[in-house]
Length: 370
Ligand SMILES: *Cc1c(COP(=O)(O)O)cnc(C)c1O
Image (cartoon, rainbow, N blue to C red; front, side, top):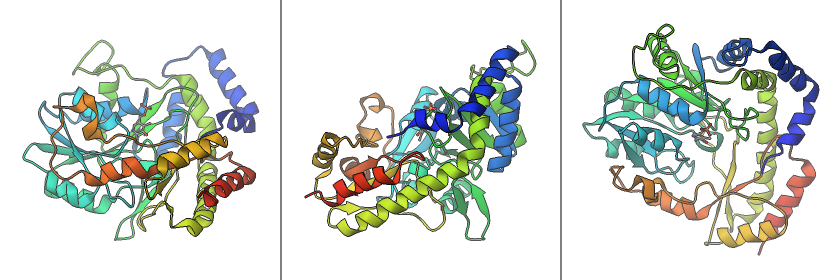
């Protein structure tokens, strides 16, 4: 699904120099590269404040802790997504309220958010799934009308741009109160281990999140609140700083691959539904996710596997069917679309190193599938 070793070879000299520089400095925690990368990431995203942390799941937890939510408060999360957002909510004894997604875009269904609100609802976590922004204009409107915080889980869509009806354009992760990022190796901007960050334009929240991520400290050994320990290693920050200037190229390569897939697969609309883009958002194709019709998804996956073509099912089980969340969530509206998607969605290999020959091999298999 990815080819990280090949990617490393394309920038081996620069990368080895950056890694070696950190190794020689001995400054392995909160070193120079952490500050450099944070300010470069702020410049790239347009966020006023960047708070680096250990991974994308921690970022969600730190965001929720900084908002000061109380046990029993409810947080809206998409029912079709990676588990991290709902998990962070539940870990803090808040109640996840899973909401169905739009079957066309895989992102949270705005209409169904309204139907799922209660007097206890305090926040919404839209997950920008597979590389495309959730529909943020109506989500912000609902949030404003109901005094809700908005945390964007932007682990999959760094670099994606959302355009408001007014024409204002903002990067994913800088639209709500807080945006969270993951630098897990397979993400569009990945490090060589674990990493994450929080984005915000709110100074007070930025200070609070910085404090939470560092044992609730104001100054050394002064603990203002109960926090956690979540840091981005200097080494990972240095690696990310080498890769950040290439992010737009990586995104363009992914978009080209997606166009090639779209073009080839349109001929088989009897069998495949190609991913739909909303006009308001650019798509950075963290995943290229098809819907396979006629219950043929699993057979197709086996067929491809036998022909050395990996695919992944993101995600096989809706949140509300996960054993860990039994008795933990509140269900406020119908979740039927998620059930259908879990049976139809199939993600194809997509990454900047994919060659034209590989793309042709994959599309030939798909187009000729009986
Ligand atoms: C990867 C991912 C996360 C978690 O990031 P980690 O760095 O692995 O903790 C959270 N949310 C989404 C949508 C993700 O894809």
